[in-house]
Figure (tube, rainbow, N blue to C red):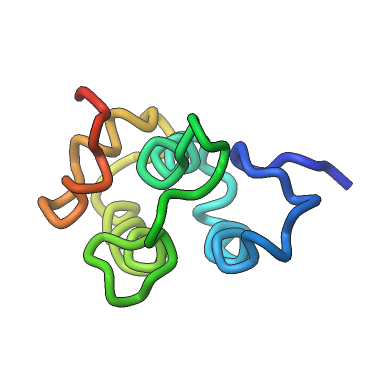
Length: 106
């Protein structure tokens, strides 16, 4: 079994269960490198090595559930996400994700 999935230490899965569920339960998400890069850029706090606050909060605009459950499936019908990197995917996102992009410079 591998320990790292999309930059997340899965040995601590109980701490990040909803995040791993959102990523790993969708093969069309889990197998596209650019989508996983975008997830890390949006929702991972590299300074704290921990998900950003509110990542899985269903009431927060632009949350991970919306990204994986609604936005990426729509984009996969329109764009060749397999040929895109994380930054390219972030540039396509609607404004509801702008807060999550901070301080990423696109």
